[in-house]
Length: 320
Ligand SMILES: C[S@@+](CC[C@H](N)C(=O)[O-])C[C@H]1O[C@@H](n2cnc3c(N)ncnc32)[C@H](O)[C@@H]1O
Image (cartoon, rainbow, N blue to C red):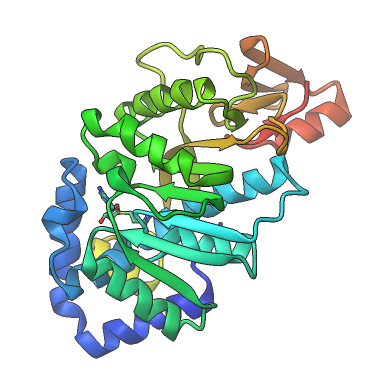
């Protein structure tokens, strides 16, 4: 589980205490209906309360997904020590908080085209005692900040662009990236397909795939299958209330892509593509490897291998 840092969770709670939760719950419920219909944030986040409702109802899940991807980046590139992180489509600063956990001390620049989100990101950064952050009003498709950053993160934002804007936005992100570009998207077939288009484009531009793929060939998955992962997070009392939920946890599905400039890190030899199936005789793993898709059955009679396989989870890297 990867839950919000305590300072951030407390800062959100304080803001919700000041505002009162009734209106926030209404905003949150309209927002989730809107996001389910693939509406954009701009259409639904028009006031400070809306941005705060996002922080209460969606930020815990997007934070967990970005944190999981950054952990994978750290595994793939353990010697990579970025000094600067650019968070584009930052919303309330979700990916910046995750990056500050993964890479403490890195300078953070946050960009969004929505003032309400930027205002909230600033308040949370100040209230939650994060380090200094540079906040900019700007558009993904016209991003032009001058100096590139060591890490560029774009989380749950490309999904809001039309197909016709995607390539230009990704070119801008890559141009601003001196080291590693991290893209996290909702775990839906449409977003995965667009990520594969982005992946192709960035490989042609000289990028190297660090994760999730163990190779740079075309993705071997065939429709209706798609590459996505899942992360479990716990729900706070506020989160449960905003979602009108009953369970104390949720599973966030996401797709992602980590692309690096040459010379940074290395891809894993294989990756587990769905939840392993286990019975007392064997563990069955669906693996995407250097040679494509394969099913690996680890028999219980091979005790050390079986023990190791039982610990593997969906999304984990595997050795050959
Ligand atoms: C679903 S929110 C994600 C926020 C945050 N990255 C997260 O993971 O929680 C999408 C964000 O992308 C921003 N966004 C969408 N289109 C944008 C664009 N063309 N330029 C800049 N920001 C954009 C929205 O304003 C919103 O803050």
